Length: 203
Image 1 (cartoon, rainbow, N blue to C red):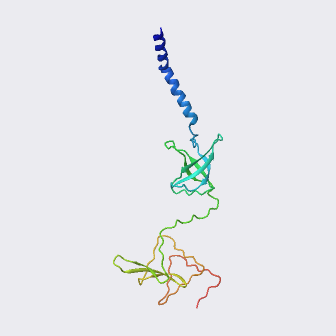
Image 2 (tube, rainbow, N blue to C red):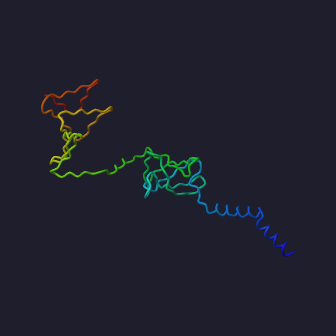
Image 3 (cartoon, one colour):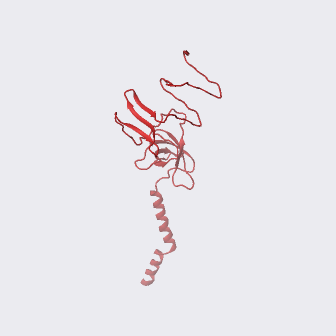
């Protein structure tokens, strides 16, 4: 009788029902400790709280509150070309085959935003008595850049220069002076030539 009782007890412990209950308990416990999802299938609006990840590029820290009132905060990837700054309101979307939401764009597109500062690239330091020279592969001089008392000077070493571009050329400065040391000044256009100024002097 004791042997049968022990066998039945072991059978109960190893029965499929008891194994299923154990697995179910583990799943429930894991589900209770699982972190809340970052976002559901519907797009969400979030706020950028940090615009630069300590180590990864293309990720910003976003905080949000979903329709159920559940809040979250996480470093999320952005679409290429989307510039996000701290304090921006952004649109989040969760692709079906991706494991986290993606920052799709900035909502406050019409809000005045300062131009982003250009990243500092390589720097070449030139002393007052030095000049930077650009030459061809054969050593023929093309360009010279130097610092003078009046400011930086860029000198084209070649006798002639052709400046071409497919679009519009615009020169902007506090004052512009054009001087032809030898020879005429010619202006040609396939459309109207407009000259505007408070006073136009011709001699």
